[in-house]
Structure formats: structure tokens, C-alpha cells
Image (tube, helix red, strand yellow):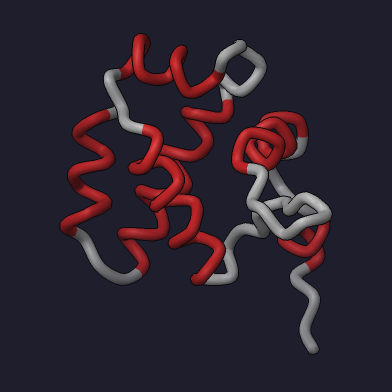
Length: 98
């Protein structure tokens, strides 16, 4: 997984999005473990900031919507749990055109 994160930082364009989704889906598998960020660091030696950077990139690319709390803070782990439970959203299935 660490190699995938390095590739994400180097690549541009559509390949970067594919690698980002691959990392996010892999990390989502651990989203039920507590405490999540410590488990991620122990299992994969990945820093919290790298995963957050990837998720923010996907949000800026309109590929992902990070859940937010009432005060506007991003809820990364809740978003990953949602990805684990529902890997594809309805919009991707029907490809809504506006």
C-alpha cells in the first residue's frame, strides 16, 4: 500500500484518480477497527495525513463526498465506513446527466 501512495504522489490525471480509489477502498476495509488511525499506522505504516490528502484530492475531483459534522469538520472515518458498506453510489450506476 505504501508503494501505491508513492505512485499517487507522482502520477497525474486519470491514473492518479484510479490509484487514489484503490488506496481508499483498501483503507476502507479497516474502517471498523478502533482506533482507526493507530491501526492503519500499525498495519501498513501509513500516515494519517497521506490518507486525508488522497480523500481531499478525490473530493476536489468530484469523485468522493467527504461527510461533514454539523460544525463543518470532515469525518474521514465515517466516509470510509460508508464506502465499505456501499462501494458504488447510485449516481455511478445510472450516470445521471444534467
